[in-house]
Length: 270
Image 1: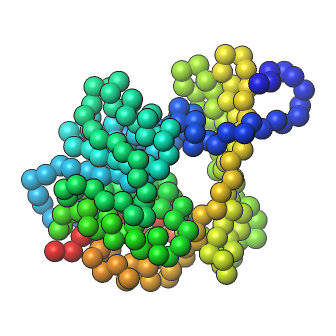
Image 2 (image 1 turned 120 degrees about the horizontal axis):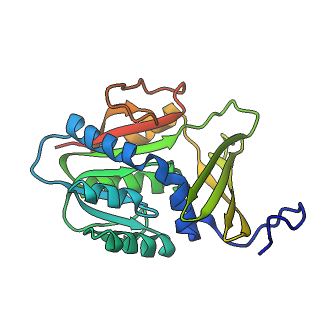
């Protein structure tokens, strides 16, 4: 570790931000209540009415939405491929006195017991599925997990194929005595490979010490036409609504390449 006052060189440690759930959670927790309110509103508006309140979250991460939905009376189940996130999510539910199930599983091939009224996956996690087979496999697995008339709320960024410059998103949050600065950089997408390079740089100052990490990965790219083609290959799900990351249920959007931040509501056909 280096002190914030020791020189100007940027030194990066060899840890993945997804292996640091407390800091990762602090970054994304800002919109949790807004997202949970939107999920309930999307369910009320688009799902066929039912008696259940069972919600499934693929790639649940730090469990922030599991806890939020459980606190609103939903029966929650989540899964994630990352062991650190699964452990953190379980402890979060336990420490808040909330019931729920969290297991380790793969987005592309998962199977769950029973059926659910609502499922959701936000913040572009879906784009970690790098092949068309895995993306379609995920959607089919979600469809199998939903009851007829249940809905899947799927959020991700569309790709700007015409972009020539990198794009940046930045956050600064403070929690529990830690200051977390995070910058996520996305490079212009490669349409031929259907890939875009992404990098997250995190700086944490806590107890007078500074840590820096750098994590790189690739996302699968999508424009509107590619999304619609993929959805046509999974007829079990019907596209019934489009929104953006303002999470306003009374402001539905037209689905097109003009919309970068995209939320799709997909309904399980009877």
